[in-house]
Image (cartoon, rainbow, N blue to C red):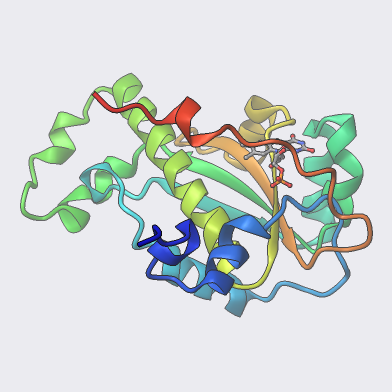
Length: 203
Ligand SMILES: Cc1cc2nc3c(=O)[nH]c(=O)nc-3n(C[C@H](O)[C@H](O)[C@H](O)COP(=O)(O)O)c2cc1C
């Protein structure tokens, strides 16, 4: 008996696997087709079930829709990312809420003391960044599940964006993400992925 093909080992059919991973690409250009608030809400409604430590859900998403808000962002974006940040139908600033612990009595009600375990700001900020970054991964896959493409960008001045858009001092900008329908010449060459044997080891 021959072993099943790897793609047949999943609960998702092959088309869904391709949509989320094999055929999904990081888009560098987008069409003018808008991304609606309803699409964004549907994506969040799906990805909010992704797990986080203490169920803390520290990711916060600031959508830059107005031309004025986009103009405020551009000076902080690296020159190689600027044109695609200016032209994408939607750009999101993805940030961590360092004071996410304030919601733990509601989000982690069986351990109300968890809020006090996170009293130390530096330790809490590390938790916030780590878990918000995990949630960014869920968001990226959620965007693809909605039939859209994402362009994550770390090439920007995160401290500057934090000051510009989050003067409250409780949020830290982590990543920019453009979202939309891929435009002409959206893809660069597909880069190699590590073979499984180089990544997964068993003891
Ligand atoms: C966290 C993160 C940061 C990235 N930052 C940038 C960036 O600043 N500029 C850029 O052009 N691409 C950026 N990328 C895109 C990656 O280079 C791209 O996703 C990777 O090469 C895989 O491309 P593919 O999905 O088309 O195979 C970033 C991707 C991630 C996940």
